Length: 419
Length: 163
Image 1 (tube, one colour):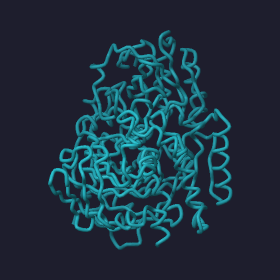
Image 2 (tube, chains in turn green, purple):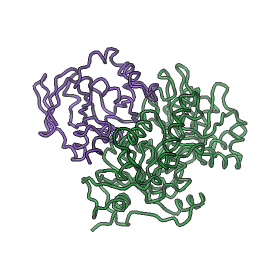
Image 3 (cartoon, each protein chain N blue to C red):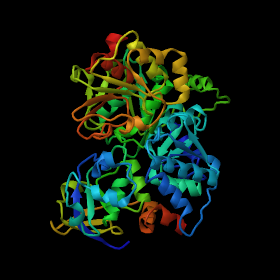
Image 4 (cartoon, chains in turn cyan, purple):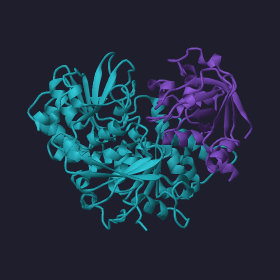
């Protein structure tokens, strides 16, 4: 009999059932329930917990964590009231909230709130980010009320697809491009009902930060979620964050998968998710020389130390094009401070970049808004028209190096000439 | 669950991002009346007055693709639409809207076999959808028992109360 894969090992460890079989539905106990405050979601959840005839109690408040990482900085009293209501609700229920540390999907990993082998849920689908350290992140949106008040979530055991990676990226190519390539090859529905496991020799060449980006955006190809097999690189990353006694859950060497596909990282070019949606993937050479007005490096899909290092190296001694505005947003304060210490921020600022403290707001048109007819190149999560505050503008998604190179030239540029 | 009868209020294509129902610029609105004011404004400016309670949305494959926010379906329920039949759903959308009280059904090729305002009659227990206007009949994909319980209970809040 074939061995077990990492997904089924994690799922079985979170279920009271003896064994978990594909296609059947079970109750699972997530290790961490993560939320952020956002209108019509967190206020709805708070009301659902507190309102009505039943005064519900949260059974395990220590399993919950709430991030105040959107609507930051606050720009009107209504938003501050919204945050205050969230804080008050957390205090009332003895739930931790985190404010001013950065974007939650990264902070939960930095602070060890989610560890390898854990099951984390959230209403936000980008919780899949934790797959970068070998944890299972499953976003269930408003249904997160169920684990919040009962400690359990239902889930139908899915198909599991293995993506084996070989070789290494060339300069100027990252996990973001691999993700875009998978969407380009297989389309936005390939992953429906499936979880994806990345591994193979080439995976060792991908940083944990880049792994988190790949997993973060797995819903681009329809996946429920994705994760990487944890390895020594995972261990080094977590030890670098000061974590100890790190334990992994991994697939057995002879683990069964429903499908196995291969990618040669060396053959991947920078790939852009072009206007108007994340399934519209084109190789960078088809867009080179297109004039662009605004660039953003940041959000939960970038803004980590390797992205800032890239931006600093590319912009070192150069000047942002006078017709271009570059915004750089480190994902967390920890990353921001590290980038300051390493001189990355200085190089970006001296080149003319606008550097902001961590916030989710650059991802949906609150941090920066495009003018009519403008185009942006961005590392953010989505490019649906309006995601930068103007439906009469276009958003192109890429890795951070492409944004930095484009910032110098004012037109979409392959970063390899600057690396 | 009783038979679900209504007209096809709109037929959406594949990989449809439901945030477009209200426009991305409106994804942080929390006031239901304001959501209804912008509902489908790019598709049908008279949408609200054209709708009858019980009308049905029809979707293609991967309905709810992207990063769906709750507002669009808050608006749909406010005008009386709580049934969707699509060819398949994006995972987060399915879970969120099932929890919110939408009745979410799957039916292969339905988006190309229904025109806007066709009269539909759905029998969830028998797993059948009849397009009365066109005189055709389609099989629904079987619904998971817990999903059926949640639909019957009107969403996760009702489901938790019953449990």
